[in-house]
Length: 379
Image 1 (spheres, rainbow, N blue to C red):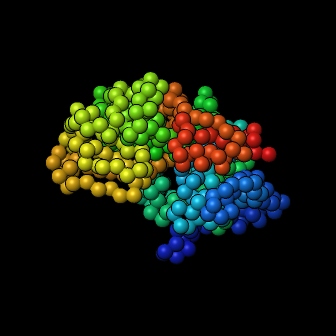
Image 2: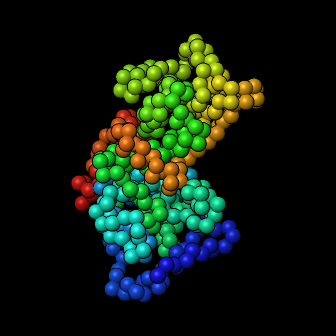
Image 3: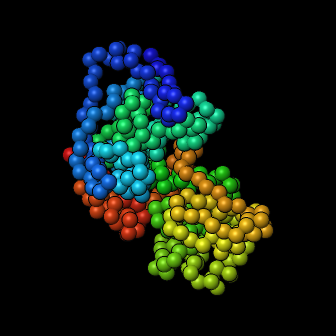
């Protein structure tokens, strides 16, 4: 009863999973109503919204959502910052919950399992990147968890909702000993910093890591760095972050990036810098802190990346970019966090506080990730 994937034209990223046979065999089934919170227009204001989820297909997992992390993407998409938001829009792509139903072909999950869903819910499953477990880089375009085109042609709706139906390939097992509320931020913030660190071999004890920014992504970069045995330096424009970096998160050094002398003292000392901030920064001073063949990786979205060619050429240095990660590495990251007791710092909120949370997120007024308690507040 497996369906097929069709590409609707060379210029389209829309894939339709042919479930007609499945629907015929499930004639007594109907789409199930789901309760969520949605934005109706570019104001981004969220309010209660009822909609229908697609049927559970043969390879699908349906999970009752218990928690959903709040990411800056929720701000950008609800307010149409990218220019292509489709309303009503239900945000949320740091989703955790408990399996409530599985299709007959599902092998990896059973009812009652703890499961997570991240930033994408489908891909072509045929290209070289999908075959390598790097589905987020699918040649035909990964289908995002919200505001994308689902397998039945409807618009995907995210985790600010009571349940979700996802192909099992894009679901991740949350270790039983890991609190669901704390697992949510790992599905975007966590994997976003873990992926480039692994790609650039920054899991080797003794290396030196620089972290720019100390928000939802940055604080997890510090935690991963310490778990890997790295020497971690935090850079911030705010001296108020010093105690947080050194005492709360255990960084080895704190540098006020506006202090030229503090920056010069670290010249050619770092193997790797991860820039988690989306504000514009001068890149040349940071490039001077890298050792020969050092790498500065962007996981935030500054408006421009500008540096002198000499900052790259002299010392074989490079600037790289990274987004989230593939399915294989996401599961690896979740297991690593459970084994090494890496837990995000979160503020748990009810769904009714979502609009205030988004406003506070814009003002960087959170330590360090909001997590919505869906199961106890979405009624």
